[in-house]
Image (cartoon, rainbow, N blue to C red; front, side):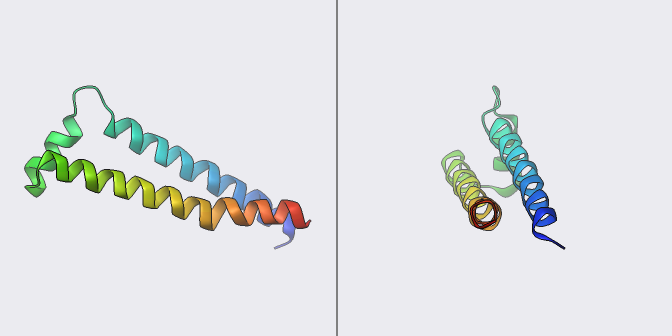
Length: 80
């Protein structure tokens, strides 16, 4: 695998991962909160606990995208 293929691969990984993150955010912010009600019923957590867990999950996922996809992509473009 050459550098150009690796750049292309990381670019698509970044795009797909951010699309997944955007979908997650849209589901979390959905108008009637059906996802929140469903998870509160299934896992028996309070609404505030669900919101905290959801926000922590989204933040962690975004950090992982940046560290493992975006930063290596930028390095490959700068270095090469």
